[in-house]
Image (tube, rainbow, N blue to C red; front, side, top):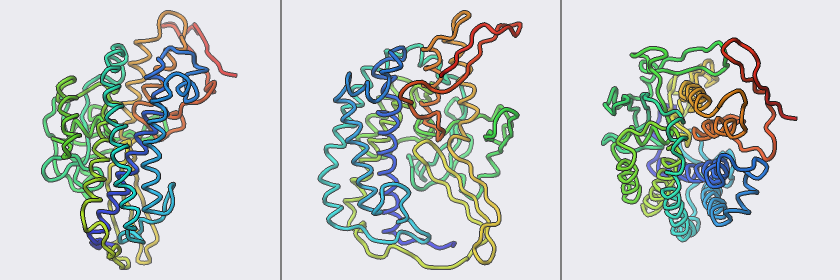
Length: 394
């Protein structure tokens, strides 16, 4: 539409987006990964799930449920729906914020903040208990990509792209959304329907880069909110300015959840958040548009072309799981080499491969933590091609 949406609508959209980050990060950490992290990678697979977590770590699970509930309820208060709300529309949003919803959310914020701080404290005590996973979960040098503001601070809703090298040097900065194709190429792989994006000036496959919480904290100079910046400073003091191990996606996710809550507070405290001018109306003013945002699991690019009637004639989407495709695949190989020992596939090794994938929080069915047996066939072959071991699920 090529219009500038009202400032109140910008703030309301970011508020909705921060709520989405909080609930999504809570889902990823507590529901999908905490069974591995708090019960143990080698624990009984029949109990290594949310039900088992409830029995062994009930306080942590209740915190996770409450944190996700906070995010989901804020989404519902803003958009009247918790899942796929239609409140965000071309030109802004379709209704202003109810003052009562603002007050209710502000009253609930301290409890949500306390949950994230408790979980960060728990995770700081727990993380060093996974040295082999830290060593092998996509622990190799890559580039990183994410949105930043003009001052280099973390941005989730709006900003420009920054690419940094494995050494932390800025390779490209303030890349406007419309210019993404000059920096990102998309390779096809013979063994996957998913494309493999790469940093175009370096080429494929050496231009591998990562997106998502780990990458965003590597790319940004700072978060830009007080509590998150304190946690970021401690995180960097422990693991370095550029954190390579994909295992630390979990730690980065918690820092971002804290940032999301602080940003929600800042937005709700802004008097303009209750403004009533929330939508600009217009028709087709441009035949192409590019939008880039940080989804919870990483940078999301949508590029559309339309005709004079607004009907889509061409589209290109690069989603977070696509950006991370090369890093996930290389990480799976790294984890398998580390944990498959001898001529037999151990359950703990299989789970660690799954846990590596879950650390990236991809939008794939394999990102979910199944209760029971995961349907699959795994073959272990020797150097000469001989089948040494097969694992099947019934």
